[in-house]
Length: 560
Image (cartoon, rainbow, N blue to C red; front, side, top):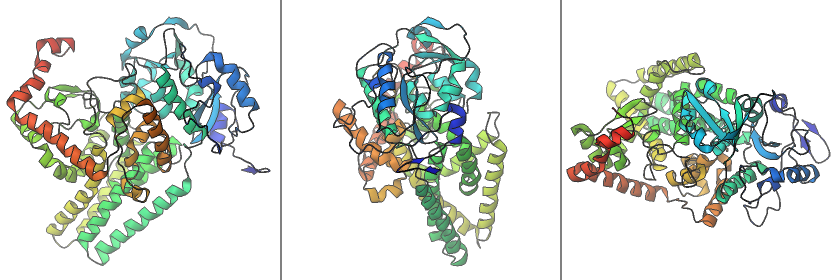
């Protein structure tokens, strides 16, 4: 760090290598605009134009560049030396930068200028994947199987406008170092509504205020608390021989560890993927026993297709739980690669009583995650740090097995396992509460303004209203709306983002659902009970599933 008069310039070596710039961090605006959604960049003007999105209105490019060059209040660096190149805020390693909105390929290969949304939509498969970002089309078919986030997110987004999903999951460097190689042309009929343009402007405001930057001390304190909690658990169990209390402490430790693991999985700690992935795997797997690779593979898909009956693995729990009558019909899971059916005695009985079985199931849910972890690691799926994943999980079962072997009786072992896992089951209640009684849909989203990124996340996700002093208990899951909208946003800044998102939703008359924890559980139980009652009723079950068992439906969906 080089200190000057009144400023601190931080050289980001990684970003320098990829974008050839030395950025300075931007300070929060001391006098924000009266309208929190006022567009801070001229390129974001709320005028509807073809092929304009999060900073793609070409008519405003010169003004944006001039503004960036002349404004003395902007302390973030302008990257790129072309004065008329349109600039936009993006994030890399947690820092906000002004970068060109579009990087053309370096070679002079011929590009198409006649692409349409309809044509791109035809390329919607794993082995034929085109995507649209800011009106530019990319053929990423050859990259699908090497994508660090797995092939499933791309397969679920192929043929769609992925501008928002891409921006919220990738650092700025990817736009320069990776995308140009796959660029094939411009989409002539690409348009963005005023609503979409405005919520993209909201994200620009978060970037301008540097809210994607992590405060390292926040996590230093969290890690210190976890270390102390683990030590206290060992002392209580082994020295004081208060095993039930020790089991409670271990359950709380696992719950809090999962929150850190969640942040690590979204690269919200260091924002350096390789570091978060390595250390998250090494220590998270070792102390928690659940594979980070499994969690990332499942969770990335969940975010992209939240509450899609066929595509979201986080709601596919047949024959134990069905969160909607849409699951009464057989459906093919694109994640698990198999068909789910509940048109049998066992499925209908369990789902018919799911409101009574829900909390016991959550108490044992952690055991299922152990199994899912090993099923993935022993499969043929490509997994990063696979050896480290296996070794760290073996380390967990070694120390935990040794720990349990000190107990005098098998009864003590059984009681410890039940109590610790039931206490950590609070986590599973918190996770399911965020989505289980929100909207569901069949197929894929991102078709129009009714189910584009922002709208879809709002319809399928809810917050939990709680005082700030209780944030530690919910671990960021109380702000699931903001987290789903901006998954790379650090947990400690979610409450700030909540203020802006709530105001935006109020302005546009959008539902922003935020009950308290107890009220949310009551409403979730009512929703599960309603589905259960329909599952027990022959008439209602058949009415809900009849269409989907017809030859017409199977033919339209190429089933059988």
